[in-house]
Image (cartoon, rainbow, N blue to C red):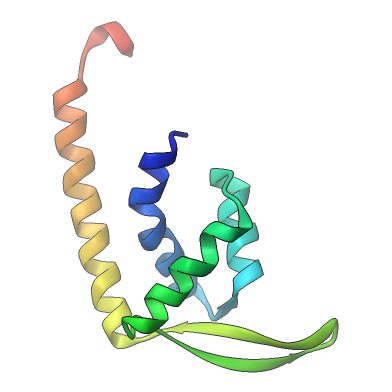
Length: 106
C-alpha cells in the first residue's frame, strides 16, 4: 500500500483500534502492522497528537512483563472525531469508486 495513502487514514485506524478497547502503544502497532505494514515509529507520533488534541486519554496499568504500560482510552471528543472521519472516509470511497469504475480494471 502506498505510503501517502496510509498516512491519510492512520489517525482514523488508530482511533478505531482504541475505540474497540483500551490499548497500549505496542499493541496498537502490532494490530495495525498486521494489516498495513507500518513501522513502529509511525504509531507513537499519532498517539501523542491524539492525546494532545484530547481525542484520547492515558493511564498506567501494571504489566507482568516489565514496567507499567501506558494505555490509551478514547474520549467523547475522540468518539465524535472518529464518527466524522469514518463518515468522510465512506464518502471518499464512494466518490473515488465512481470516478475509477471501469470494466477494464475489474
